[in-house]
Image (cartoon, rainbow, N blue to C red):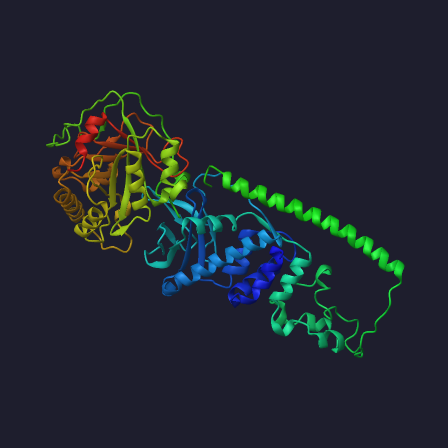
Length: 554
């Protein structure tokens, strides 16, 4: 049986949600080709005003968002959205529709579909990029939620798996057209509500519908406007010249043989042309599929390493510079002085998170593109919430046999002891190449909905996290911060005993250090790792592999 015929016959078993979606798609495409994003907007998300879809081609990720009040319906709505994408794929496979994808060459690009979005953009907040989604200031920094400008959770997210994300990315981008042929006519017939399907009695003996009937508002949303090619599928639907024409049965007329012969010749020609067009379209669809599969560069949400807000990656220095100091008179007791500086050449590393993507388009693509990495850090948690990609990234780094470390993004509105314990439990037993845990303290540690903190409170919370990590792991944890945060909140000389991972995205030959430190262990020099196809930072270590081994877990 032909695939289009099987598809049409299977429509009877579809739920009304899917049937309504197909009717809306046909209506949206009635006037000609349409952008797939516009078709989704008009046919799917407009009837669902509290939902939206964010897609990140770079990471191969897709997320569905629903209002926080409907969080219990999130999984059901996600399943229905994925089913809608599968139906579009089936229409293209059967030849009912043709899709023409477009290449997204902009690194870090994202797409938003839904009424909850209005001119989304990447904005900087306290030096950190975030996606601002509309004029009201709703934003997202984590794919699990969208917050209002005041910090309240407005929408909750549902992450799709890699295969589902790939399908959604393919069938929400590009242009789609519906064929005007018998297959589409059969599809329209099958989707028509029962009350609008003409029966044999209606077709042969019932009065023909009038222009007013054809324009009835009850039927306007069920099927697209009539065209010349679907008139045959709707006997009796042609508007009459007069609404008062008397009803009469059709009379059978015998057709002259020469007319029948001429019609047969024309049908043969038309059949041959149709076969040729169909074969050409199938070849085109196969070629498009091969292009999509062979697309090497990827094409949720704002990566904290978003390339759209980054500076060009600096060249890696051949020799290690002297760090820049803001306070040359301060001489605290420094337990990191045994890390040799200067060193002949820095070691290259990176740090990644769920923003880097999933699977072959995520951390794996980073390591394949930059095979000479000596070390890498991965985010283990944001507060007490585990990073979606942590376990797969952690295992991947072990398979690559590089020095691996993890960092927990410290949130000041959550218990620091519980945050560290959660991260340590996720790490599991130490291996021979596991670096000590890093505590990430930066501007976004101050959550909008969290309580206010003064300088002493902040220092106490950060020290509590560091001391807990030291107690649980038996090693000196790293402290990730930048010059501004370190200079403002980390005055206490106690911080100097912890190795510093300094974030300073600059073309300068050396990073600026907060006053409490005279040296550093790692330098995050840029938010772009050269040659990486996915979001990843550039990190440097000022020593040799033997020096790096001094920072391992026990």
